[in-house]
Picture 1: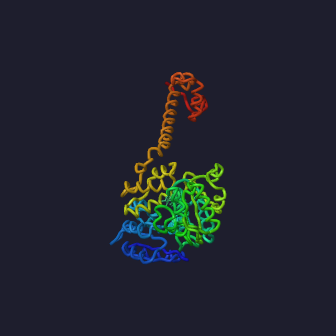
Picture 2: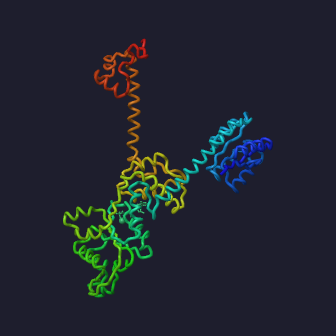
Picture 3: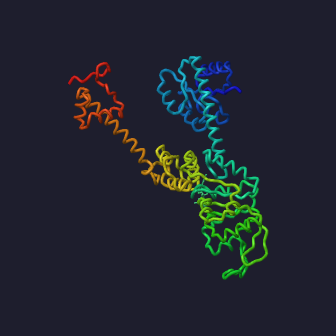
Length: 461
Ligand SMILES: Nc1ncnc2c1ncn2[C@@H]1O[C@H](COP(=O)(O)OP(=O)(O)OP(=O)(O)O)[C@@H](O)[C@H]1O
Ligand SMILES: [Mg+2]
């Protein structure tokens, strides 16, 4: 398809002859006699390239350029300039013009620049599209990640959408265990049915069975009415058993029985009730180790562990840090209705260097806090709670570099002063000759410096 060029030029003769030339070269051409008309035309229909004069009535070329950066940021602009207005061409380039064409127009030169500008426009367009696609494919049910490990896990969750097998999710605190459990539930056959999260570690030991399986009125002191357990509440859907490692052995046995027989018997009852529940269990403990230590039932682990998802800690997938950062930046600026542009390079570097013991949850908290303080500007290192810790390495690297530069200058100066005599120089510096040689090596100073034939003449004084 032919590319469309918009020519914005108040001199009618020049405009029309350019148009003729470009049409002859196979381009589609539209014309405007000033910036204002050009702006209207682009709002109606985008073009591939704009060639604009600088001085025009109504709206000049620079003002038009400003508008274009807003309404058509991907469209390259070539400025037309006469010899006397090269200055303005330069400021136009600073303001985002792709290049400029000098009047009188050299047609060959013009055609070449047009071709280049069009290619450039093509590239920026595809780049934008790829970034959009990337953002789309790396987000999955609120889960964000571009790292290979995360993409593999998203793929696994997709495959789980057609089955109801038990899933065991293992990962450090804050790695997204609950978020993954929800993704599995809402992406699968169960999405219309209940998702019931239960934190096993938060229920007093004596109440766990009645909470999970329900109880009959009068089953124990305080059981004043019948209670439906979490299993029944989740019927048809998903029961998310968080911190499964905290279940006492006795409850582990009851749980195993429920999973095997697919019925629950409420405490104080004798009638089994059929249940159809998918169990997703989560833990930040190594359950195999607990089995070995006799703290977790091996047969229950087998039952739960039909599919195992191991969530890598954030420090092992640092490539996800920028995407997560922008994800939460977007989330919190929207939620708190704050305007924060982004992060300074230093702040992003500090984010990448940080150790993230608290994983994604810690990163989320850091950004939430920074958004509050960085209202109206970029988030800088000073807005990050670990700023000094995270940046020390960089500072000391800079300092080291500065020191070795200083040392190098000092040694070169001393060598020169002592006519490149190594023993004299070493004595002057207060170090041994062998240490001086080592320094010369370290600092990349040639050892034969100042000797005949090296091009470096010994100092005359
Ligand atoms: N990949 C991710 N993309 C976007 N947000 C994430 C991701 N992983 C975790 N989060 C967010 O981080 C926070 C912690 O996640 P979640 O509660 O799922 O972690 P967890 O592993 O269950 O932690 P804990 O063991 O402490 O309960 C949540 O706010 C969650 O939305
Ligand atoms: Mg959790």
